Image 1 (cartoon, rainbow, N blue to C red):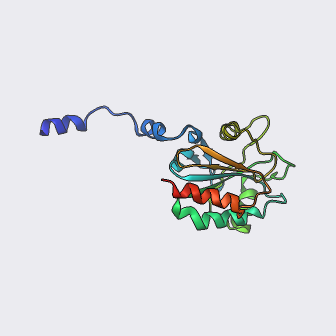
Image 2 (image 1 turned 180 degrees about the vertical axis):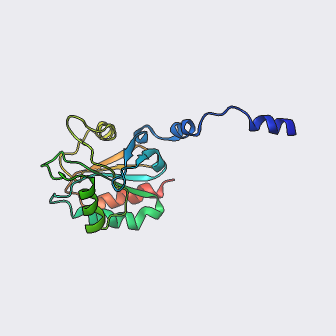
Length: 183
């Protein structure tokens, strides 16, 4: 028995990253830099969570939705909701700033505590692969800032909400609560 235990301790196993990638849904197999410090963040760390993926902009009429998104984060994070913000300058050039300026708006002015990532493109030429996959899954690309995609715990895109759907809209909240109740 000791010999078997010793042999199994030296058995060849796939690296941890290979095991993690196998358990990670295809939608999340991307790495995006974090807004506040530019550190690469593997999105696989959010596997098993309900995700609300939002393209944001600091100079948009919908920018006050940051408060509502933060309220959702505060209310449901312990149950497994992760709000994910992706600044984009694709619509009306309403996110022209650099990471420092965007972070100042998000963290200092709106008190955002949910994960925010560096600016990416969410529509048109150069669309980030995550957003290409979200659009393909729903048949809907963002038409403006603060478009919302809802992803279940298995990494499946289940809904898409236009920019004018506020974070407190009962349809959105109802879908989030339904997904959080599923294990």
